[in-house]
Image 1 (tube, helix red, strand yellow):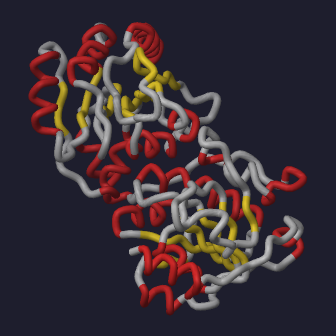
Image 2 (cartoon, rainbow, N blue to C red):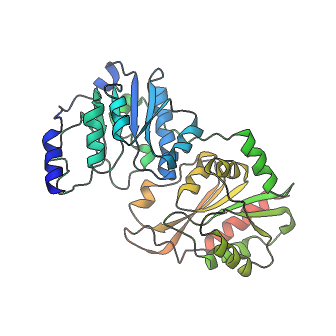
Image 3 (tube, rainbow, N blue to C red):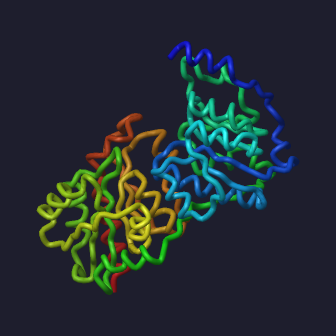
Length: 355
C-alpha cells in the first residue's frame, strides 16, 4: 500500500491555483460533482448545491459521481443530467468531458485521485481535506481552487463560503425531491383516511432513538384526539423488534409498521406525512426536502450538529432534541435525550394543528 500510494503521488498532475475570477469569466459548460459520501443524507443535501449551480450556470450540464445506493436520490431531484459510476471504465468514458469537477469529499483517496487523473477536467475545486500520512495538501496539488471550510460549517453552505459566491452571486437553496404518482398512490393507501399522519423514522444506518425514550415522548404528547392521529413506523432491518417494543410501551396508541419499501416508495411515504420524527440520518434529510414539520434527534456532538443542521425554511416548524450530555465527537451516541421540552413543544403543536 505504501508503494502504491507513492506511485500514485508520482503520477498525479500538478496544477496551479487560479484566481476566483476564472469561475465567473470562463465559459463552463459541464460540471461534475463528487459528493461528500454515498449516504442518502449526503445526496439530499447535495441537491441544494445543484440548485445553486443550475442558477449560476444555467446552460451547464450537471453530472454526479454515484453509487447504486444514492443514485435514486439524484434521480428524484430531477436536476442531474448525467451520472458517472466509480469504476475505471466509466472514468475512461468521461475523459476530458468535464470543464469543472467540484470535489466535496473530506479527504484525498486513491480512487478519486485516479478518477481526476483519467477524467482530466479543465478545473478542479476542493473544500475540506483531512491530513493523511501520504495524501494531504502538502503532497497533492492536483486542484485549481481550494476553499477550506470549518468542520462545523453547514455542508449546505459550502458553495456560499467559496469563490462561487463572489459578489453574493449565490443564494441559500434548499434540498428538493420529487415523487412518482404510482408511489404516491401506494403511500396514500398506507394511512387511515382523514387523520393527522405522523411518520416515525427513529433509526438510521448508524444511529437510533432508544425505544423507551421515543415511547415517553409519544405517551406524553399524543394524549388528545388520538382517534384522529395515525402513526406509522418506517420499516427497515431493525424495524420488527423495535416495533414490538414500541407497541408494548405505547399500548394506547395505534402504531403500525409500514410495508417494506424501495427508496422511491419511501420518499413518497415521507412526502405524504403531516409530521416526521426522525433521528439524525437520511430519513431526516428526506423530510427536509419536503419541508415537513419535524422533531429531529441529534447527539450533542460537534462538529456534526453544525455540519448537518436540518435544511429547513425558517417558517417550517422544527424542534431539535439533543442528548443531555455532550458526547464529544462521537455523533452516533444518540441516547439519553432531553425529552421534557420536546414533549411540551410537540403536544402544543398537535393541539394547534388537529381539529
